Amino acid sequence: MTLFDPPAPLAERLRPRNVAEVVGQTHLLGPGKPLSKVLQSGRLGSLLLWGPPGVGKTTLARLLAREVNAHFIQLSAVTAGVKDVREAVIEAERERGHGKRTILFLDEIHRFNKAQQDALLPHVESGLLTLIGATTENPSFEVNPALRSRARTLVLQALSPDDLRGLIGRALSDERGLPGVSIENDALELLSRLADGDARRALSTLEVAASLANPVTAQAVTEAFGKHLPQMDKNGEEFYNLISALHKSVRASHVDGALYWLARMIEGGADPLYVARRVVRMAAEDIGLADPQALRLCIAARDTAEFLGSPEGDLALAQAVVYLALAPKSNSVYVAWKNALNAVRDSEMLPVPVHLRNAPTALMRQQGYGQGYAYYFDDPAGSFAQNYLPEGVELGLYQPTGEGWEARAEARWRKLQHAHGAGLSDPDDTSPS
Image (cartoon, rainbow, N blue to C red; front, side, top):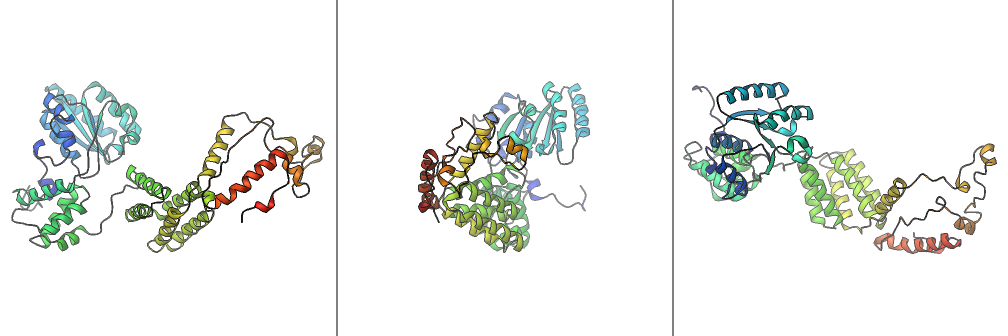
């Protein structure tokens, strides 16, 4: 480092020098907890560290290597490839010759494809490399089962506001941090909340805010922080957690929950048209015939979102979500459709009854196609007396609920069941409007 080199960022300068300085993760590092036991034994196996950004995955990997006196190699799966893995293996073999084990830390391991992950397997299995992989994504989905089975998965948690307040206090008192800078209480509370459990974000914001005001004020924190975008990886687990929370809030008729999760998705940068497609699905799956208008309104909301774009079109999605949450619920069609698919998949493909077959040619008519078919408008009673399923098949796929519009439809459905069973005329007077 020379006089002309910029100082390292505050988050880097304050990186813990030993395990005792690690903030948070007491469920792993507390007395009798998994990593404490590992460090006491000195036997460190391969690990997968899964947790949100800024919670200390890289720091923990470095400290573990230091604690067990291992050679440490750090790679990022964003830029590294199989060639880098081969070079790490050569380096590890050289270190083993000097009696030292090697820990390979692979940041964002979920970015490695299957072939790249497979390249690690023989070296992890032989013990040449002790792998510590860090990921913000669920290893169940992003890490190959073979590699996952050879590593213990540890879940790191977002830092609590108390953890962050302690970290900020350390930053202002430690000689490596910002000595001489103070922070007002309301600014401290605001920063510990806005950081969303991310130590790096808290320290980066503090460093900028300290350049704007001393003591650091809430206004300086707001200016340094910029726009607060909720954490959401558009291709990751958190994205699907949010859409799941939105769907389940709508299903449970919890309007505030539905609006909150919708706002989290939109503010997090989700594609409004993706959200619109999911909202349309909710109308079909969970509202169904309890309110047939719901599907139309959601299609209109999708068209509005596409036509206006954000932010104007977002209001149409909010309207649709509120409507769905307030609407009566029925999954009878959803269940009936699954029943129908299962019935088809679980049975042989039985022939269509002859009287239901189409007969566009003379040959087909000679074969009896369409013979005996009773046209409903000419012969209602005969129409109801016909069989509309393959011979010998009896099904009860659709079971209406008593919710909303479907409660009105249920009476007609019951009479239609009776009519089809007894060959009676259509009970038109019970038709729902």
